Amino acid sequence: MANGADHRASFPCDNEKAPGNKPEKVPKNSFLKAKHKRGVLFSSYASAQDLRNLDLENEKEHPSSPRGVLESCKRGLDSDPASPKNSATKSVTRCTNSTALTHWSKIFKLWKGKSIKRLASFPPLGVPKLPKWKSRSTRENPELSNIYKFKSSLVNFSLSHLETATNNFRDENVIGRGGYAKVYKGRLKDGQLIAVKRLTKGTTDERTAGFLSELGIIAHVDHPNTAKLIGVGVEGGLHLVFQLSQLGSLGSVLHGLDNNKLDWSRRYKIALGIADGLLYLHESCHRRIIHRDIKSDNILLTEDFEPQICDFGLAKWLPDQWSHHSVSKFEGTFGYFAPEYFMHGIVDEKTDVYSFGILLLELISGRRALDHLQQSVVIWAKPLLNDNNIKQLVDPSLANNYDPDEMDRVVLTASLCIEQSPILRPRMSQVVILLRGDDYVRELEKECQRQTYQRTYSEELLDALEYNSTKFLCDINQRN
Ligand SMILES: Nc1ncnc2c1ncn2[C@@H]1O[C@H](COP(=O)(O)OP(=O)(O)OP(=O)(O)O)[C@@H](O)[C@H]1O
Image 1 (cartoon, rainbow, N blue to C red):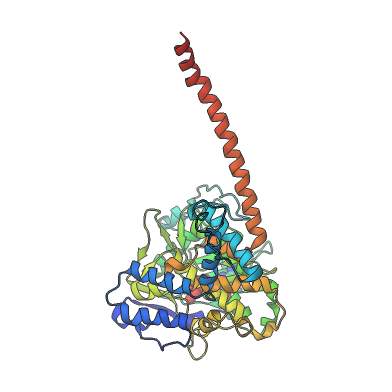
Image 2 (cartoon, rainbow, N blue to C red):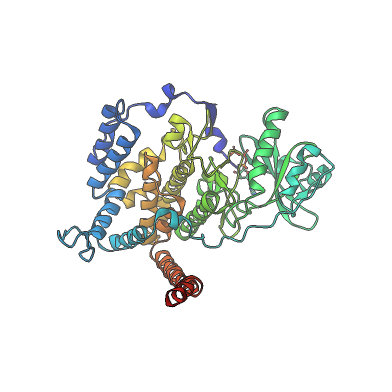
């Protein structure tokens, strides 16, 4: 059952009173000290760009910070003696930190070779082709008839159908309770298990708006790592009907009594799956979708621990030409808010990336985003991340039973995702690369080579065609 409702927030933006503006204690670590100094002394007159640059500079200087590690790799690559830029100076800057750095240097090589935009255009693994939508109408409620045009396979459930499936919405069938809805387990006549989300909170208008908004997004989404909508029911209330995810939410498994089910390989698989799902929403779907409420209670788990992102109640389409969206009302869950969202109401892909970073910290440490004393996992983890103190970060229930390379990658990715400044956070296409590591990078490199080869071949073909048509005529003219 979801307990995220305790921390749910929905209130108007008030920059003056935002708790995020409270001065922090001066941390011992010099890397954090620099950040702190910047926040207190300079924030009144520095431009946003200055602050970003300063952030970058401070972190570059600190070799043990995740960005410091990446920067040192990058400098190593920049100082490649074969590079014409460096041949004169023969800089000796090198990645010093063993195999981990070799790994990151490969990633950087790839980043240097491709623009970020190009990397973003790599197809995520396992993303199916987009479905073809067909139209279908409803007699029930003409206002909602357009909904059925999204997906040919969407079923319009009658109330009696849903009542039969859920034992008349009996309390024993409740498997989730969110801020807006109750979710009931059910079984259809053909035996299929379903989860019926019945919107319960707010006025009729609010419920209709919430229902249409969630449906407007979820009906267009189709990926192995997003929740599967089967149909809707608009009789006797508003219902969204999903395939049942047998294990419930990640939050309930990770923070419940059964957390020993989640060994490291499962946690790693879950991290990769959520990253794939988010990459799809941000970069591969018809339109940019910002989820806005990524948290462990909104990740469902199938029987084989495949994660599925659910609850698109707050999700937003973002037009391509918009850099971000500004909201005047905060909605979401405490503990997962990105600083720029909390302080300025700014919403874009990077706000989801921040929340994903918190989720990674939950997977690594087994701690909640906010514990019973309302202590944030970020505040707890930051000093350990800066000291690269993996032993203290890792969930004690895992002991030493984890793959150290995978753990390193997840820890580094988490620390980049929770950067204060959104510009320092990776995009989801980069997150997927960071999490998957060497093998994935090698696959991408092969893909790049294949594309280059194809381009060269087609360019040659184009040249040949051009010769045939234009140059040949030109040659003939010259000869005549
Ligand atoms: N398809 C499903 N299979 C299994 N459990 C589900 C399914 N959908 C939802 N749940 C359970 O119901 C809970 C609440 O669902 P959901 O997050 O969609 O509701 P909500 O009211 O929008 O919640 P929130 O307060 O997070 O906005 C989930 O955390 C999960 O435990």
